[in-house]
Length: 125
Image 1 (cartoon, one colour):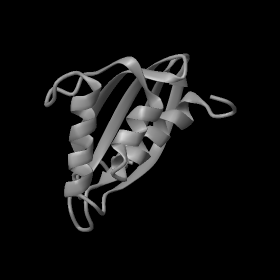
Image 2 (cartoon, one colour; image 1 turned 90 degrees about the horizontal axis):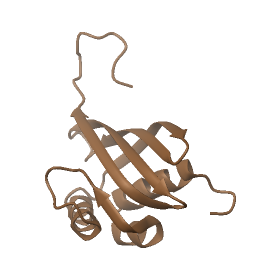
Image 3 (spheres, one colour; image 1 turned 135 degrees about the vertical axis):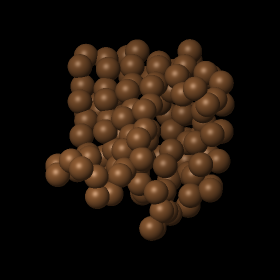
C-alpha cells in the first residue's frame, strides 16, 4: 500500500463509491473473500457494489464528509456525514472495515437520519 494507511484506503473506498465509482473501489480495495453485513443486500461484494452504484445514480449530488477515522490494527472505523442531495436527508453513517493485508475483507455499516433541532445541544457531529 506504500505510504497510504488503511484509514486512507477505507476513506478512498467510501469516496469512490459515493461518487458513483463503486466498481473501481471494489476492484482496488476489496479482497477475494470480501463479505459485508448490510441486511438489505446479499453478503457478497458484487451485490453491495451494485447497490452502491444504484444509490450513487439515484443521488448524483451526494456528498460524503468524513468526520472521524479510527484504526486499531487491521480494523478501521469511519464516521461520516452523508447528504444524499441538496436540501434532502442527511445521514450519520459509521462504516467498520476489517482488512486482511491491504484489502478489505469485511464491512459493516450503520446509519441514522440526522434529527435537526433535536434535544441534544451537541448535535450529531
